[in-house]
Image 1: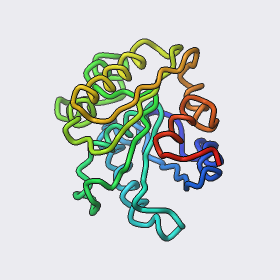
Image 2: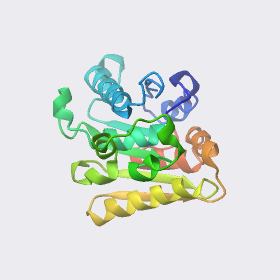
Image 3: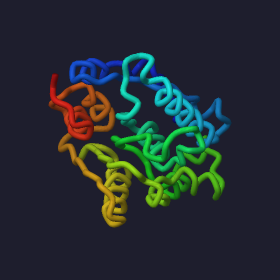
Image 4: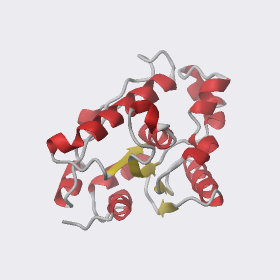
Length: 210
């Protein structure tokens, strides 16, 4: 939520292009500029996603095969995007065909109790709206949740709990535990077809190695 920009995350594009897909790296406001409001960040992601869906055909993409993914803060926002009421953005409810949630946070209460409350201005309403795990009834696409065993305990627990809740709701989910991967190594693995996230993305999208 504090650092990173789309320009730093173009490296996975080669994997997807070689597999026959298009790759779009979305940018979103940082939490300081958003004055601590995660909802502003989420709305930017949703509006950007809607733009991609509506304009995919203009750059050779297939608007009927839109998948989303994100790592860390992007993993959190991916989860939030997956529970979006897409008709509010001019799209079909089933606009997104799948999601790859990498090393994210899906329940905001533990985050609210952590040091992050110094820069995220939580309210009860925001914590609820930004907790994907509380709104699994709105999940309309299969998802894959990934984490590394060298990540901090809460990243691991949040990933396991989210996947378990989705499974308990009877919705399609895969949980990928990557042995000996730390947080940033998980992000880097999205660019490697043999890494945990690259492999998971290709499987979710039903793509080969190209």
